[in-house]
Length: 397
Image (cartoon, rainbow, N blue to C red; front, side, top):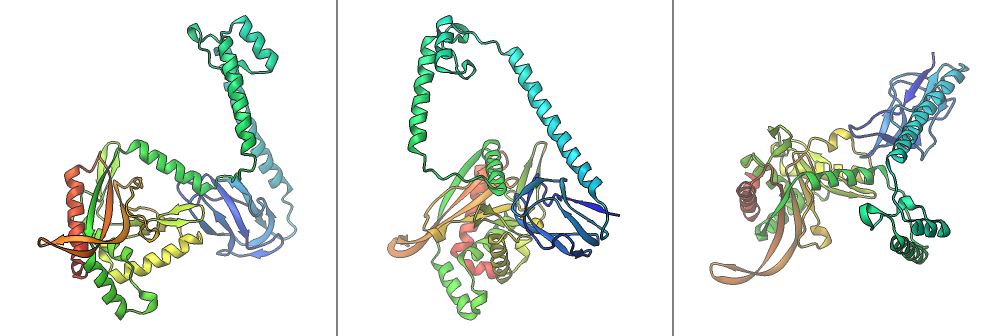
């Protein structure tokens, strides 16, 4: 008996999926465990593995097209089986959903029309009609919001200005927002306006960290080379263990003190940003962390990261040092309570024991959610992290 395969919900926030590639075509035999298609969610591109066997009888979404979760994706059944009724029922169901949405929109519009009475002077009404302006788009400046002559004149001038600007920008390139970019925008907007951010900035002498990296890499193979970011992530994990009040999340009725340390590492990709997570980072060696970051960063760039590999972070590190950025602040990756921004390493004069010498320094910024992390809590964490990075042999102990 034929079975409908619906668009799966491959992440907790997924509402729409895009079929990037079909690995089978209509008429092909498929077996349980086969990768039927590659599907792009709001977070990553994932292989969609089916749990039924049979013949692929129908494909409901073309490559490059998107559809909502639970809409028909494909039909699998026996060769020669009549599936017209399944396709018809699916289309009718989709049309009914559309009709309900339209009815709701129309109902809201009618309610709005009945409730929104517009006050306008006879002259303003005549002017608006003459130039073809909808009075519903105009805000009145007269008594009690009454639309008067100058409102029509002002609105007409605004239209002229907009037409001119539109003409000047005729060559602008417009790109439809990807699912990932939309989700990033929603996530960061929510974070910025719900979590009261404040920032702590500190400068670190990284001379010893540079030397440690050099010594380690001389003993490691090319594939195992350690980066400054690897060392920082390891130091952050140790510092979080010593400062558990930073390894927290805010809930409306409680604060969660996490028993595990999962560090998200921001990775730039084509459509935005992915934050793969190094789970239990405090329990992993520097080399293990380095290999895992490389692997997940590479798979993130090709959208091959799995949902479970970008979830449940308790702290995030964002590093723009490789771009030459000396100092910046980041928006907290909720539900984390903080995020660390790493700037580039610069050479400058530094004072040690009342003597000036040339050294290497790096500025880091801790963005904190003030609902959870007080200034002293954040400062203690940074102090511990600074000590770790200025004497990084402690990381290996």
